[in-house]
Image (tube, one colour):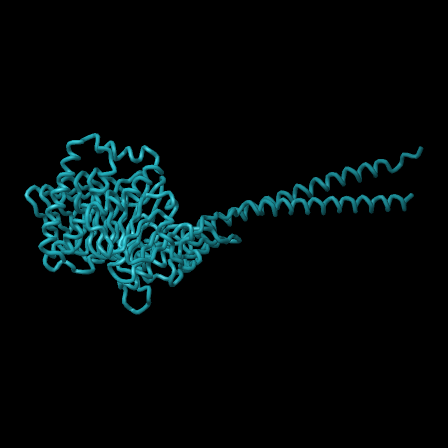
Length: 379
Length: 160
C-alpha cells in the first residue's frame, strides 16, 4: 500500500484545526473588547446625562428663566433641553460611541410647603384655655394675636410680616385672561385635576348643595374628589371622620365652597386626606383626633370647637385672599377659636420633597422651587 | 495523484473558510445578544401627562356621599340625627369593628370628660339658638350652631 501523502493530509488537518481555533479566538477576543468598550462608553454617557440633569437642576433653581444648555466633562458632553411650558427636562449624554437620554419630570414646589402654618393674613389664637403648639415654621404675612385668659401658643419658629410669596399659593391663570387667582381659575384647576386622573380615580360632583363625605369603601383608590358649585361659596363639603378607608391612601377633596372637617379621626395612620377650597377650611372635633393633611384654602383656615387634644401633620396654607371679617380683621387668616385644650400642628416634608397631594401639582403652577418627581431613560 | 492532492487541498481550504465564517457569524450573534442586555434602559412609571378625559359628573350616592340642599338644611338637632343616623349605622356595619372601637375607647377612657363635653355642646347650642332668635341672619352663629349639631350627632351613635 502506498502511504505517501499521509503526512500531507495530517498536516492539512492540523493546520485546519489550528486555523479554526485561532480565528475563533481572535474574533471572540476582538468582539469582547468591542462589547466592553461600548459598555464603558454607554455607562459613561449615562453618567454624563445624569451630570447634565444635576447641572440643569442647579441652573434652574438659580435662574427661573433657565431654558437649557450644554456642557462637557471628562471627555464626554451633555445637552440639556428644557420644555418651555411643561416642567420636563431632556438630557442627552454622549461619550465616544455611547449615547444615553434621560427624560425628567419636575414639579414646582411653592415655598409655602416649607412651612407648617402659612397665613396670607393673620394668625389668631382666641379661647378661654386654648393651647396651640406649632412645630417647625410658622410664617404669617400679617400679625399674630393671642386673646384669652389662659390662652397660650408655642411656636418653634414663627415670623410675622412675611411676604405673601412665602405664605400663599396663587391659582394659575387657567382661563388665560391675564389674571390669575380668580374663581374661574379655581374651577378650571379642579376640572384639570379630575381630567388628569383616570375615571376610576376621580369623582366629579356638580352641586350647589353641601356634600357630606364619609369614609366609604367606594372611595378606596380615589385620588381626587371635586365638588363644583356654580358660584363662589356653593358646593360646600363636610368631611366626616376621614374619607380614607385603606392604608396608604392619598385623597384630595376640592371644593368651590367651604370645607368642614368634622371629627378628623384618621382610621389609617399612613393615609393622607388633603383639602383645597375656594372658601374657608374649618376643623371641629369632640374627641382626641389625629390626622395627616395638606390643607389649602384660598380664604381662611379655622380650628374651632376643638374640645380635646388634636393634632394635624402636614401643612396648612391659608391665602386669606378675601378680607371677609371687617368687624374682626384678626380672624382673617388662620384662627384657633373656642379651643379648650391642645391643638398641635406638626410639619411634614412630604409635599416639600415633591410628594405633593394628588392634584396639587396643578395648583403650584409656575412658581416655587423645582423638584424632581420622576425620570426615565428614553434611549 | 497531484490532481487529487490539489482537489483535496481546495476542499480543506473551503472547509476551513466555512468554519471561520461560521465562527464569525456565531460571534456576531453573541455580540448582538450581549448588546441587547448592556444598555438596559430604566423605565419608570409614567405620571402626570395622562390624556385628559371627558368631564362627566359622578353620582355622589355611588360613593356613599349625602348631598344636602342648602335651602333644606336641618335646622334642629333632630333633623341632623335623622339624616346622619342611617349613614353611621351603615358605616358601622361595613367598617371593621376595630375602627369604631378606636372612638369607643376614647369615650371609655374618660367617660366623665365626655359627659362634660356633651354638656358644653348643649350649653353652646342653647346659647347660639338664643342669639339667632334675636339676630336670625347672623351667618357666623348659624355656622357655629350647625357644626355643634353635627358634632352632637356623632356622639348619639356611640355607646353611652
